[in-house]
Image (cartoon, rainbow, N blue to C red; front, side, top):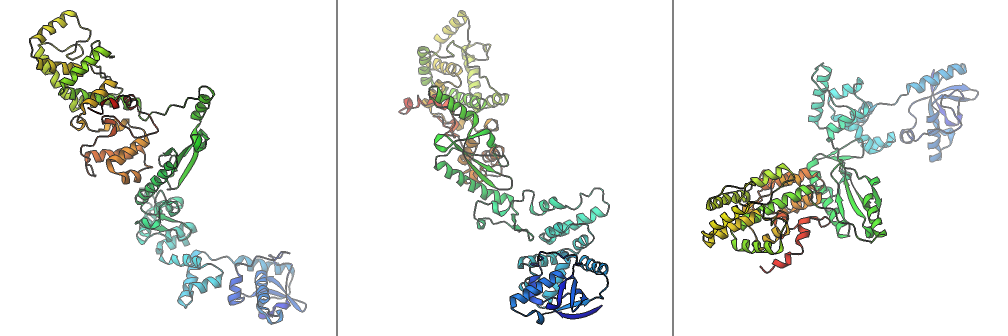
Length: 578
């Protein structure tokens, strides 16, 4: 075989060339190199008359022709290095073509790194190397980043124990992370049965970037507001937040602003639990003016999507049916569960009854009102204090208000010199006439002050829990709720409405904390409320009274109803001057 420089005009493509075809080949990958350095690898040719046929090197021939055309050079002045074989047969030429093309395998990642690194040592710049090889500067930097790889990782790649994608991911790891990975890899290959093995594939990315892998593109806030570390994927276009907690604090605040902006525009907004998907198939598309609502979906990877103009299918049907009948608007959904309202009714009842003990004059007037206007309890019988849940019953029994009532009851029973009734109270219920006469005779012998004291206790026992009269008494007394009650875990467990929970959190811990936890589950937000109430890792909220236990009563979700508050609206004005 003879090496010669042959003019471009004297070269032809042989039919036996394995890459031969009518269509010109794609030369975009080698053209930059040929422009910069010319054809460096000889073409394989054979004599054919006065010219030479190209057995292997068709793409190099087309690249050289393109450069000659671009530079306006005559083809007889453009010389290409060629390895000239003997004419031989077409079979020999075809075999040579196959051998030359098959042998020309691309370099792998580490081979490219080593080649680029040698050029850098010889004084070439990244831009020079990129131009020569027809690659971007980013591509060259990515390959050079492999220099920081642990030697064990490089050997694992060369031996086929890890894939190219895994090699690239490990190039983004810190030295300590690479050291940890190597330790797990060596334990795995050392036959340690208890070893979990080094993470691979998708698990490797999770191990490096965190399980959530929150990309910076998901942020609704300016990236400069985030003070934590950002991990970049050198071999992709993504970067990730290393501190997921720091990300969610900023993201939730941004979601809160997003919610507030929609509310200001008239939308009723629901922020879904993080990770919960919006089930659009359960909703009809309804515009804002027709009662459409907005739903903010917060995904575990940090992405946020706002769904505007939807209403639950059942509500849409009900609204349409109402229009077909009398056009009456649909009732708002309740803010609290029945159990939660029962809890409030019993605790409010307990507070008012305890305060009645110190206000016999009000108790007397309240008793007269019962006698005149009647009452569900004026049989006369004590309130049964029925609780929907055992935890509510235990909470009321352990309250200071109930303890005060129990102590006063024992004292009054001693004054009257009678035993407790079947109900465990002073009030006898449907007792017999002789008992009433005996009590009357005893009362005649007691001074008015003592009688009023007894009347206050009996009035407290017979005041109906959850009634409008309990609310009226509370408006008249204006009780010091903190003396008798504090927000406990029993009520927090009963509280289910997400808007109410977040509003309650804002009231006790501040809007910044509430906004930062907006998309967190109710359980997480209620835990923060618990910590504030008990001073566990947070500043203790002393004397905090939620709107649910104020007089008059209030609540937190304007789009929901609260039966106790609704019933009290018509009487609040009657007690404003007291």
